[in-house]
Length: 391
Image 1 (tube, rainbow, N blue to C red):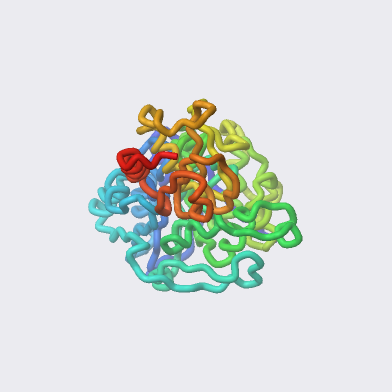
Image 2 (spheres, rainbow, N blue to C red):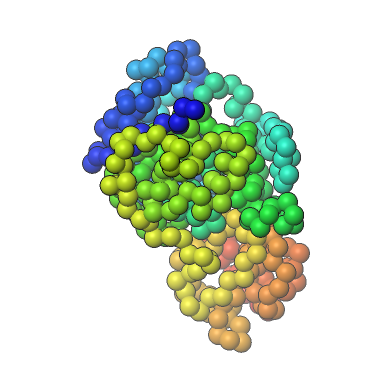
């Protein structure tokens, strides 16, 4: 059996490091192929922060695909809810690259949805995706090498979650099932593996030039690695990237579940990696916290079933408005905040953030939105204070 091939390249310059990796990989004939490049550009972040794909990695990929005969290339992304796509594309550098390379840049959520059936799905029977996906012959996933507070790592397969249509992205965080189906795995990991059966990219270019460790995908610390991985076996690329991050691939639940579904190989001995001594570049990442934590000891968070968008909003809100929350402290002198679809308990007077908490909104101060932006949370709190309706 032919082993899947993963190429690892290391260098100081993201563009040349990416081109070096791509030149060593035997790409198929791409003439007359319509290609979608899916970077990680779903958040308001600057190149080199370790949050979003470095634009020069995308630039190098475009140039090399054109050298191999590709004519029609599109960059597409669907941002997390509450993020303005135009601003995200500007900040991440994707707009500049699209203009410089004369490549169309698409906000996938501005198009209509298409419903795709998940073969043999147990938790996911169907998913809604951007309808334009049917127009592409080849999809290239270009994620950042990051840890993730919910899934341990996020790489080329999880990056495809951005192709889900609008609020369908949050659907994976809200799945509920019994252990007879999930076998003890978290529903999110199980859902990602099922999603991958229909949203597996054709090619992976993993941007490890500057990754993120700790509390990823947005609030960890930048991690300079200077590496890029490429493969036409994305699951194997993710496995090798995980190993370079210091994690055993088989200990990443959604990678193991994807392998069990026959979507690729994660056993390193069954993967051909070049160079063979690639582990000389291993640089262990600080793992994500096992429990969500915030750097505010006077804030208590109740979280059951939240998504990363809601957690990110909460962190942004606290970073910006923490000092303005004295009026919302409870008897223990702490601010109590609740998030998550399955939240079923919190003290009276808790600040309840997001539509998912609406079923217990009588327990505290309910802030609607999915999720609400941080300024809207503060506006709602101020409005209640002015009306004298603080609990």
